[in-house]
Image 1 (spheres, rainbow, N blue to C red):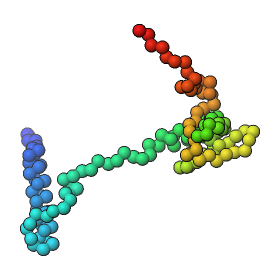
Image 2: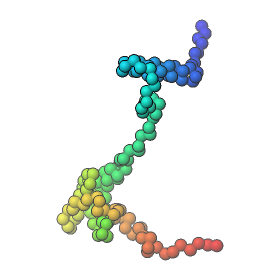
Image 3: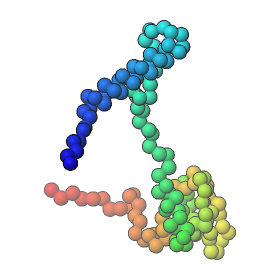
Image 4: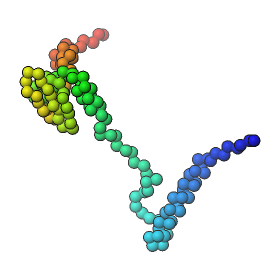
Length: 139
């Protein structure tokens, strides 16, 4: 028994799609008033596909906070005014972090006041750009 594979061509698919669109356009005009004039207005969704904007939330920040909370990692939070807060992150939400400190009261820090943060164990490894010696290029 031989079975023949039947494939449609791209031209057949486009022709069928165009015929359906034309039929829908005519039916839509006939229902509104019977006039066969071409309609003016925005193109249909089939004709124009707008790009979706990228997601606003990548969840990388959430993953980082969750990882530090679960491990009770001691963190240094540097505020916009240069003040450093050392402690562990207890919880977070969209706009704030709760920082547990050992010898001082716990704090609720708004994220908009945070300049950057890093792990306490990385404190010696960080160098500021201003403090770094100038790079000498070899000729």
